[in-house]
Length: 152
Image (cartoon, rainbow, N blue to C red; front, side, top):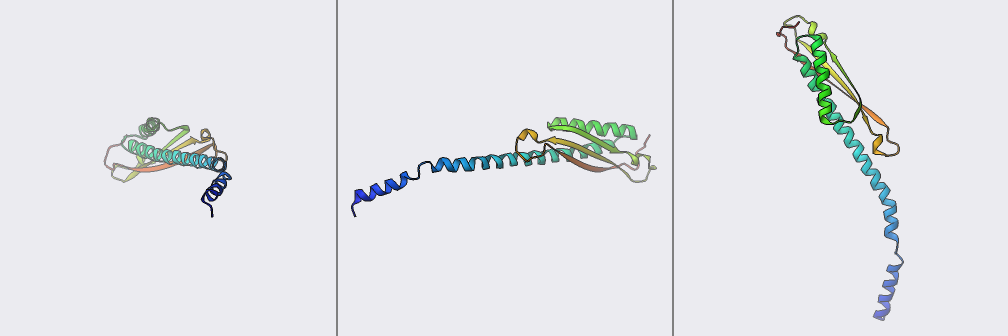
């Protein structure tokens, strides 16, 4: 076989693939963008969930350190709000509930206080079709009240 003819056939075969790379890019690029949007959405949900858990833990602990039910409720709500704002969490709605029934227990009886924090995280700004507009995350944490600390 003639070497120049063989090389000409090889060059001719490679010319027939012109445009295949751009076609592959057109197919794969939307899929890569979709995967990236999913990673961003799940990352935001995970980070927000961790922040809501920490806010509930801090709120329950702050409430358990108070001496009265009213002070516990206000301290827990304030700590949860402060923590979520410090974290820069994109919550559209925040709800904090502090259970203060443990403050009515007699001195020496073990009791607890429970904080529940809810946060609605906006997902609509990610811009992925089929993704819900928001997700509500909820966390609950219980902290013991010192059984021998005087209460009001």
